[in-house]
Length: 153
Image 1 (cartoon, rainbow, N blue to C red):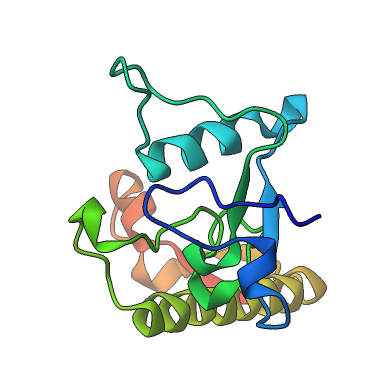
Image 2 (cartoon, rainbow, N blue to C red):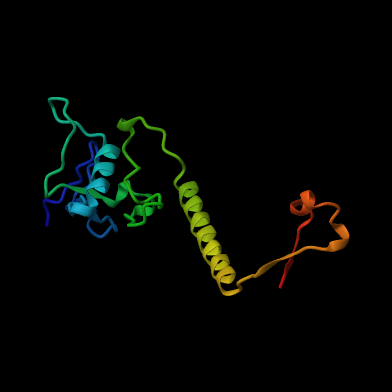
């Protein structure tokens, strides 16, 4: 286990020097249904080979939890921790505030929960709409469509 090394350029985290510090090492997604996630991780890491080609991880390539928001990887595609976004200064990329990303994600989850609750309420309380036409308001046959009202039971 001591040969675990993070693959991110200029990240010096290894299993040995992070032992007991809560750093976790993740393998790249390799299942067929996860290949798009693997591609996102590779794009985020922005690592290239010596010849300039895009770096491809091998089966033993690892990335440490230091590169994920809240120091852990998430399986939820909408989570800010779904792909690695925290990198050393060499990347020269302006990263957004991790607290803002986490707060935004929590708001999204709350909205989703509220929408699911509303959908359940609407589904359980079916509304029937019946047309109601008053003879007093009808002036001509041509205006029937504009003189229609609905009564909700």
